[in-house]
Image (tube, rainbow, N blue to C red; front, side, top):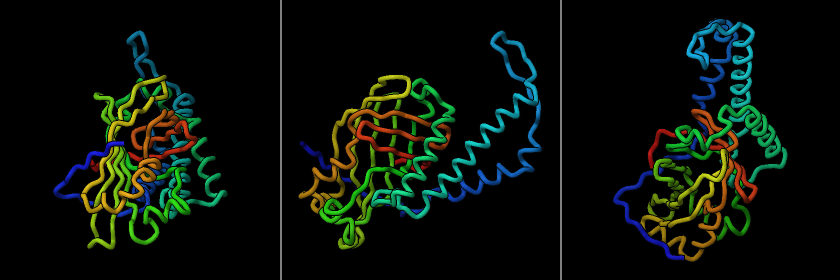
Length: 261
């Protein structure tokens, strides 16, 4: 596999941090009895004939209950993800089952049932906060991810207008004067159904050269772990959270990021 090396004059790595604690507090605040009870009980809705009608209190209450339930599940999910480093270096079977259960609850309330027909919700920059992909045992040792190399944040940038996706995996090499670098994997995607996309690997590069030298021997192993080629089912997406499942049996949870990579 040909690998093109790209030099970047300056690369910064954001340090790993717990997933959006502020977001959790905002969601908890929005679910307080005061906020829920003070919400308007009636509002106007445009019918398909262009006329306004008033939604009953019972109808709006059903909407509020659904939104509140989703927000509550999100809070539980973020709590469950605390302290597990995105699950990449393994989690207990009990923890994995807990997360899977919460994911299924969210998926059952997916507000975007046909995500590939609403690509505006999918476009942009996303940050990985959980994955069932794991780097354990000899893989972790060979890649130096026990002591020498630190795995930083993982991002996915999606350009729906071009049908392109870029996975960016950040690294920090402590033995090289705290060298910062990244693996960038470029892929294209095509819509396969109302919720699935087929993904095709295009190219990859590690920058800077010093970091490529570190991974050169085990580059195929590294690429094999993070290569997105295959298909991806988008099982949940809203304004801030996205869940996907791929053809290899992996689950991915990403939150929307303001950082462009």
